[in-house]
Length: 304
Image 1: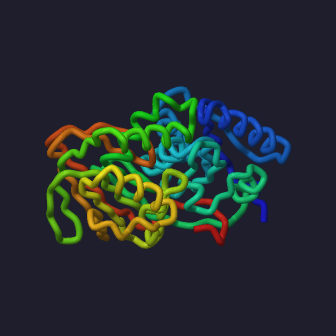
Image 2: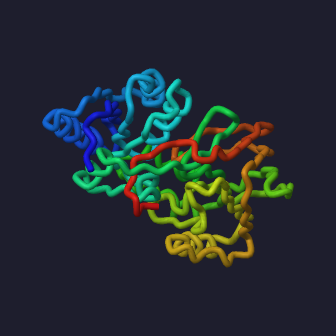
């Protein structure tokens, strides 16, 4: 079923994936015009702009379409959740490098198929992770190795996905920084050096890594893995095996489930929110909690 009675806001990141998102956005807007669909179009100009635009427009539209990668989707989600219309529906035309959100939701990357989804009437409600009462993440909040890879890859976006693999593999072969943190989760409190810590709302990220295979986007739970320091050889093996979800045997890995997680920074470290990187200083805290069924998403019935 195709619905044309709703009003759409199309938010395009023109620099996403080397300009691919802009081409996708122009294609979508042309299709909307020819189909007579009521819509507005906005192109972002800087980091954080999508959040600002959506927050200002959400009470005037029914569906907001994110045209870009996971960073754009994350900004749009934060715009919806900080607006006066949190009941606004999110739709996605995947146009990024990894498109982790779309992949976990079952939204196809092929534009004609994605168009049918975003104009359809199939929706799902998903959980979100809220950090420090002000920032939402839909897929992962990562600390340690993956956040540092994302930080280094940011300056090599012309290489796209290759930049993440290049920096990830190169870091494994160099001395790996393992910042200390204190974690409170599932009734446990522990502290130590962190090779990698991931709080997840979805089973896969980084396009290929199934870091927490059992995670679901609608179960009201935050899943977490914590890796203590490990040898370079073992890190490389686990890096490869994570693509199949076969890394969970590692003795250095602990798994937890909870609705709230607190991480105290004992040293400075990077954290990534759906791939968007921030720096946290020693003494700061990340207080994460799940908001169940917080967001309506246009998605295929069979996708997960």
